[in-house]
Image (tube, rainbow, N blue to C red; front, side, top):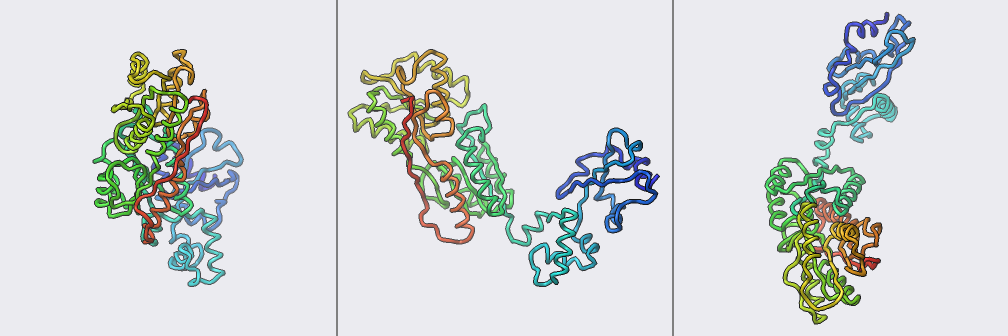
Length: 415
């Protein structure tokens, strides 16, 4: 029996060992073939020198056939350190550190090649804390999302708008060798507390009040770029938005051109981007000689409650001049939900009720009938937010404290 098998028989390979205890940051998994009939330990001398270091080494026994098979594989979890790399290379830890951090002019080409081969062989991964210390930054950007007024039945990233923002920001940061921390909550104080506790380099805030954005800048001392901010602008941050009032104006004009006169508007609330869209809606109606409603339908966060609201909307004829009825939702998500609701009721869209949305999320073209909506460039909005944040991190002057992206009317079958 080999020395390694004796270790196994003594219980060192006990499969009850905690996997969490074995797996920590920068742990690498290797498979090592061990012939059972070889009287000598098969490992090369440089690897064998690490066997005794149980603080970094854990083994897990295969379920069956450990001693019967002529060859078996051991799953090895190993964290190799700079000190161990230096010992294997026969050089100083300083030389290894120089190679790791790209200061190769201080080490001979031959030594650099040797160290890199050892790093590759033993899967060396630099500890994040050391990397950040060397660069002077954490390389972490926080994406903070205000979850107020969102659908309570789904996580925020299930909403195509927020999901696309999240995906675009993560990819853009990855290309810059930065990391993304995401925090979403309805409790603004909890957001303040959590974001301020982390050593982040910058913040992208989505759907926040301008005062809360200013507060985050004050608490962290870090640059902040906001998307779809509510309240007074500009602030101590850069804001990326869309021409929301213009988009609602264009949609309302389109509905009027389709002989719609009773146009009801549905929104999450009556402030921020929804308020701007409401103003565009009212302007279009006044220009057409139609008295606009001074009140919009505020949709509930709960799905069952929204179904009840839709029932009430159908039950009460809308006030206003005679003409075709239309429902204009300031979010595609709710417009698509309403189309599904009408289909279950046997109500034809757009023949009986025209339905319009805002955003042009991916599902707008997939629902039946296709949703007429206002397209905002969500992807570009997220990309510009990242670009503006890095301009601030690099100390470059911003061209403007606020950027409004153009919108576009997209006409499909629902209106």
